[in-house]
Every structure is written in C-alpha cells, then in structure tokens.
Length: 243
Length: 324
Image 1 (spheres, rainbow over the protein chains, first blue to last red):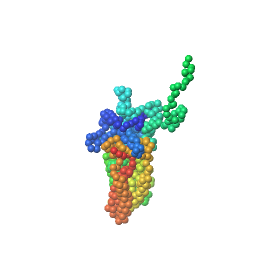
Image 2: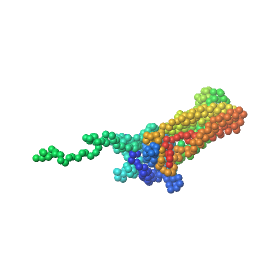
Image 3: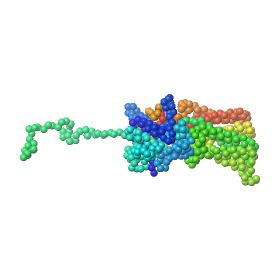
Image 4: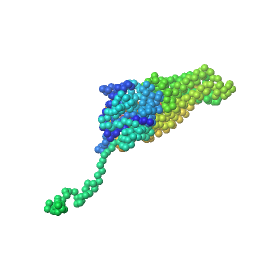
C-alpha cells in the first residue's frame, strides 16, 4: 500500500514562507474554487491556508535557537478526523493514503476540525465547507505536467529543499531513507494518530578534538616549534656514497 | 473551545425535551403498577407536544451550526463510525416516537396487544413509550459521546460527559414536568417535584465530580511534543499569520480566565441550589410561579453550564496558536 507524505527538514527550513505562498497560489486557482481571503488588504485580514510556517524559540537567552516550523495536514495513518465525519465527506484514499474532503458532501459542521489535534483543518468561511491540505492531489497525478513537476506545490517552491515528498511505506524511497537515517519523527505521538508526515530534527555538526590531537605525536622533542636546522658542514651518507 | 450558541441551545433544549418525556413515562409506569392514578389522555397529549416542541426547537438551533444546512440529510450516512451521525438518526426517531406516543394518548387509542386481560404493560401507549425511553437514552448517549469520544480533548474524554448530559436533561425535564403539572395535573406536582430535586442533587454530584477531575487534569500534549523539540523552554514567536484565522477563533473562548471562573459559579448557583430552593418552596405552598421560576433559573443555568463545558475544554491545537 502506498502512503504519500511529506518529510520536512527543520534543520534546513529557513522560514521564508515560500511553501505557504505557492500552496495558496496553487490551491486558490484550482477546480475546487478559491481559498477564501477576507479583507486581505484591510484591518483584521483572515483566510484559509493549507500550510503555515510558524516560528518557535527554544531555550533561554543567550542560549536560544530559532526553529521554523512548517505545519500542514499530516495525512495520519489513523486519522481521527475521518471516522467522526457524519456525512462521509472526509475520507482517506485507499490507493495513496491522502486524507481529503469532498466539498460537495461537507455540511460544514466543523466536527472534524475539533477531532484533529493538530488544527490542520480550516473552514472556508465563504464556501462554508471544511478545507485542508490535499497533498496537491490535482497536481501529482497530472500527466500533462513534466514528471519533475508532479510534486506538491510547497515541495517545488522550497528554495532550500527542506521538503521531501514520497511514499513512506516504500522502505527504499527518499522519504523513508531520510526518516530512517536522519531521525525523522512524528508530531504528538501520544495520540496514536500515526502521522505520515515526518519532521527531521535540527542537527549540529560538531568536531570533537582531544587534547593530545593538538600536539604532534611524531614530535621528537615533545614540544611544538621549528625543527632544528641541519648543519651545512656535516657530512651525510650521500656524500661518501655518491659514486 | 469556542462555545457555539447553536450547539448550546440544541443540547439544552433536546435534553429538557427528553427529560420531560421520561417524566411522562415514569408516571405511566407508576400508574400501571397502581402507585398513581393515570391522568387523562389530553394531559399526556399536551405534554408530549411540549416535549416535541423542545426537540424541534433544538433541531432548528442545530441547523444554525451548519455551513450547508440543505445537505443535513447526508449526516445520517456514517452511523457506523460517527456519534454525530448516530445523533442525527436518534433525534428524529425519538421525535417520531414522542409524537406517536402523544397522539395515541390524546386519541385514547390504547388497545392491549396481549389481549384484554393481559397486564397493562402490554398497552400500545406503554410499548411505544418504552421504545421512546430507549430512544431517549440512546440520544443522550449519542449527544454525550460526540464530546466524550474525542480523546485529546481531555476535559471531555470521560464517562462523566454522557452521564452529565443524561442527568442534566432528566433533571431539567422533571423540573419542567413539575411546572406543567402545576398547570395541568396538580395531583402530580409532588411526585414530579420530588424526582426533580433528586435528579438535580444527583447531577450536582456527577458534574461536581467532573469539575474536580478537570481541575487536576494533566495535559498530555506540550509544545515539546507538538513540534518535537525536546526542551523544557519553548516559546512561540510567530504563528504564520498576522491576522486571525479559523484556528484562533474556533478553539478559544476569547474571554478572560476570570470570566470563565465567574460563569462556573453562576451555573453552579443557577442549576443546583436555586431551583432546589424554588422547587421546595413551590411544593410547600403550591405556587406555580415559584415552580416556574425553578425551571427558568435551571434552564438559564444550563445555558451557562454548557457554555462553560465548551470553554473549559483546551484543544491541543492551541499550542500552535499562542502568539501572533
């Protein structure tokens, strides 16, 4: 079985919001109609987004670290939002594990958004239906696009390649290898939702130098400094044996 | 969570409707074993219609919660998995049974299905009423489980939630039945009033238990698990948008902690001691106004109680929306 998902590398994300912008652009121009924006240039602007980049500060000054944290639907393997939907508008696709909303069936009761611990679902206040990340389902299977572009809009936009896209059930896929080898982890594992999207942790590259490495082992005088100069008048083996 | 008045009215109104119906069936059950004299059919007919009116009002209120009320019929589809869907089925079934029960009583059509000499429990109204009792409890459980089944809303995720919904409904229904009896069947006032006080005391115990439970709740999700960084000190600096969003509106009550606390004390006073006092006084001097006041304060208190129920629940998604 296939489970498409994103793997987001927090070590690489610079918090530029390019994924947010490209996500909004692609998903507001699709067949499902625009993603609402209310008062975009006015006081209290608001709107529906599938993807947001948040910023957290870890630690206490001066030992702090800034973590940019892109957040979207995690396409859980056991999505709590799906069984609670009274109409069946929320569903998880058998073939690729994408969690979707059928906008024609949704009654806008918002119960699924209550049932998502991550707050990944946002209602469209104009269309009055629940919306969420589709993993660009209208893009990744579009054969009119060149193969390299059949990826979610956020993945294509990321200038630092912090976002990987692939099948997390295939152990040899790029995403599975990244999760396995770079310590990929799910969010809020305590609720058993088994998110398919994973995050790669912040990593520090540190060089460990032992004290004895600072002193040359082959230093005959056991101290640093220029080697003694050779006496020019001294005779060498080469002098006598140069026949 | 943000308390929606549509849902507050839905749950309090249908709760009172269910409780009123259960009160009627209690009288019929007592009458059938000879402990009470059965009032006439028009009493049952009128009270059933009042219960039905409350259920209809609740149903109407619920439509205001929907973005697409015209598609509401679809909500019956997923009854295998969704408590909301089950509620959507249980409510009309119960309404139908209340209607039939009231109509049969009003028309006086009450043949004994097991023959003229069979015990009165075989009467048609009794059997329809029993089905109604089953439906009423099923509806209480559905309503409560809608909230209790969400495991990460830890304030709701307890058996006390459906128990409280059930007992609040029954208590307010019996209080309403007392008021109506003062008007239509004075001989039943003491019977209903006694039960109303008993159920109000009972729900005080269970709601008190859930309040104590929620006060010492330890939330399992923290910012560390929310973003997966193992550190005791994490602060949000930006939530990704300068303006508000659905996430900042739907999951916050938007009031101060002091307001929340005052609503708690308001409902604790309005739902429990005041109605009991008014009921006791009303029963003593037979004053319909005092009994009416008992129901009015209790219902008002229940609106505050439901508001508090929603506002108190802390959704883990709020961890992601703490600073602009």
